[in-house]
Length: 81
Image 1 (cartoon, rainbow, N blue to C red):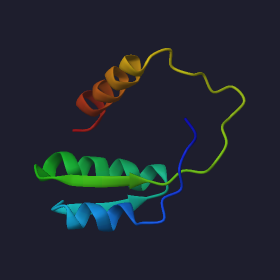
Image 2: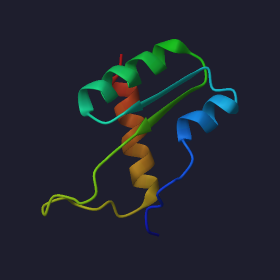
Image 3: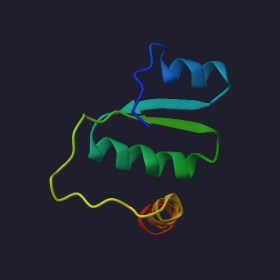
Image 4: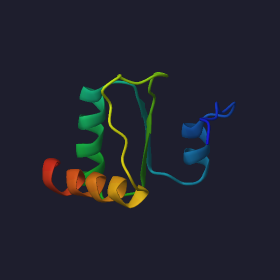
């Protein structure tokens, strides 16, 4: 599946749907800060992560979507406190 460029603002849609906190980030430091804040906030939050097109040549690919989910949940549980 190819990435899709949205013409609508994801953040505006989330706000209209009742998200209490909505933020858009484009670098790792701010993403880490916002993930920490979202975990502490205990309310509906949306973090839009903007990233550039392309990838490193040595970037490995996950073998399954489940492995992706498990690693992300592990990161959230262990790294963000």
